[in-house]
Amino acid sequence: MIRSWVESKLVMWVTPLLVVCAGAAFAEEEPVSGSNALEAKIRALAPNAEMIAISETPIEGILQVQVNSEIYYASADAKYLITGRVIDLDTRVDLTDQAKSGIRKTFIENLDPAETIEFSPAKPQHELLVFTDIDCGYCRKLHNQMSEYMEQGIAIRYLAFPRAGVGSHSFDKFVSVWCADDQQAAMTEAKSGGEPEPRQCDHPIEDQYNLGREVGVTGTPALLTGDGMLIPGYMPPEQLKMRLDAIAAQSSPSP
Image (cartoon, rainbow, N blue to C red; front, side, top):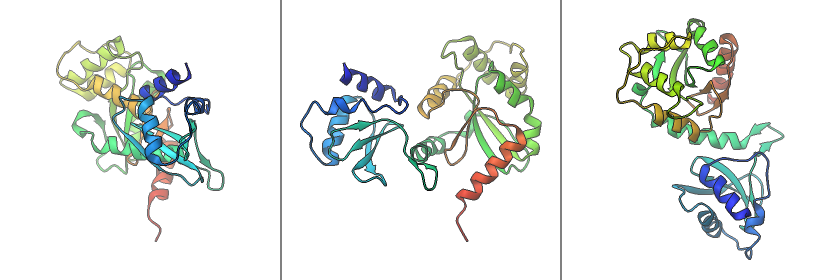
């Protein structure tokens, strides 16, 4: 029972919040040491995982385990698996989110900008990928303030994340927006509550929805910076500009 629970969570890349009971699955076997032994045990729990990577953490005796795009932790003796977040209390840095940001950045670098719907000022100071649902209230609020975001120097490139899933009405509306002759105008109409003219064409909507799930999107709007930082939820234009300026200042090398 415990082993099947762990396997389902690993295979689905869903991290339960601050749960440590998965260690019981490892405790069934004699403890062994070394990352090879740990990887073998993780592989046994998630045989279909495309990627398993094990690395050191600042905590002695605790290793970081990446399974596809999710982050877990394990004892170095390969006995216990730990799910949750690691936060440095001195610096207040969320080390788990920092690791996930690196994973998200890889996905961003492989994303074709032509497969987004962009709203941008002439000379943007910041660029964001925004996973959006056409029918979500805060997504509509964000879009209704698009001119204000652009006045703040923020470019927004939309990716589809219809929360009701593939085949839903929201999904179909996003397909129609994507296939429209004028995607920006169709998006604005749809975000205003209108029904875009039904269209069909080759589209990336399902791929973008799956990408959102892969990088940890659970609600919309979800804002993703170029460094892979995920900012969940709506943020007013001026406040978002201040947040992005602060992020940029932190990532800039010291003189």
